[in-house]
Length: 496
Ligand code: NAP
Ligand code: MG
Image (cartoon, rainbow, N blue to C red; front, side, top):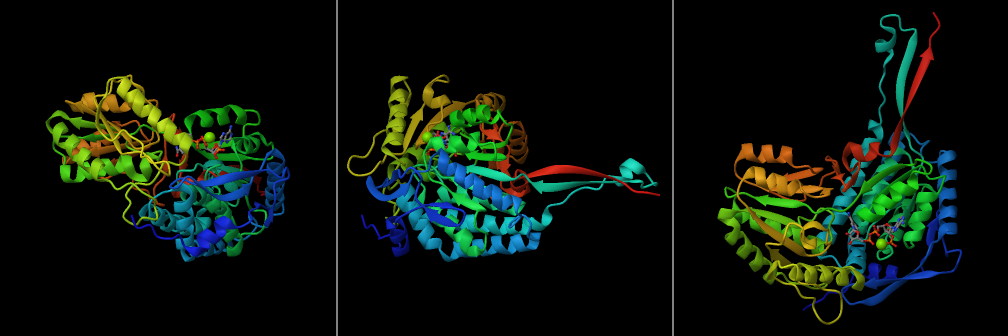
């Protein structure tokens, strides 16, 4: 295995003495505590960052609140905010290798995926730069006064205020830019709480935002554990929480946020179904279904972790998938030939292996994989089960690892029912060459996103979000920015 060295700037950044980023300054945590950051491909310590607690969150929220109230950011002309966001995107592009390598180091993802996320993240920022001048209201004067026009009435879209942005570890750069971009476009100030496992790129992106011209105090970054996230959720001066992570924590956030009814956007888990009909092009369906589950080592909210295959194609699809799974090169993201990286942590790997054991104990047939790789790092094999019981844990629960469950079906009605029989509703994949069937099935899937003859495409022009227990609201697209805006209605009585 030829493993290349990380970009020197990434290595240097990881080794730096880190601080919390509050009010444009780097500072230690008030309690002096730290948290250790690991490279999951080698299981080695790569950085130590301060651990923010409630008092640090208080300081960060205060900085964000002050910057919001004095209008140093929201008060800029929209085009001015757009220019800064565009510069931020250019800085992300200019530091693409450093940023990608920091996430390979810290998250373990492949070079290809890390490169895609950085480039996509920069393009999302540019899209939000353009949206700053598309924050529009409506004029209802004619509806109210008719021809008389004695009432001038309009709506104004205003930034919600201080946003608490709580990030997961599975796509650190993507989730940072996907939340900070629209929050800034809307004119909000924010406090970012990255995942305990992956704080590095958030700290670096916070610096780049400052360098781009985002005023101090507008983007604050406080690494910490769940208690720091909880402090943001509880804080009376935080107006909005945007959270990506587990459904369990998402529900907890909703309960906590009910105290002051702050706005909440939730991007949670999934158990998404891909459906392969007999009339599908299997040369497309098989590699796409494999990618849907194994990309990012299955640590993907939209992972296609349930695969339904029509009876006439099941053997061909299962054997094609098993060949792909057995051929996948597992390794460090710094091995350019690696196709699947490690699991984020020892703890998460243990969780995935526990699901694999449960699958076998519950009687599912193991078709490929099923083992962890011995040696350094937290690697699991791409794993495929067939015929898992409809009530078994691997069939129903989100594994968040490279574990696929394949189930046969006979007709369209049956498979729609089975696909929709989940507490989640994030993604759905449909593979067919029949245009009518494609649209009809897409319409009947109870999910926030559907892909036909492809899977997992994301674009700044399209909103992304889940229904049922996959979450509330959308990210990306115009909707992604509207999640950080609120509406004010203004009535003006005009004198005759
Ligand atoms: P998680 O616990 O939901 O973490 C997500 C974020 O929320 C992290 O920053 C986390 O901090 C923070 N957090 C934890 N408890 C909190 C609380 N009470 N209030 C506010 N914030 C809190 O998820 P995880 O531990 O990273 O992963 C566990 C499972 O979640 C995975 O196995 C997977 O099923 C799911 N997951 C889903 C997604 C997705 O994109 N939908 C992403 C990641 C994980 P810490 O990092 O310190 O825990
Ligand atoms: Mg957690």
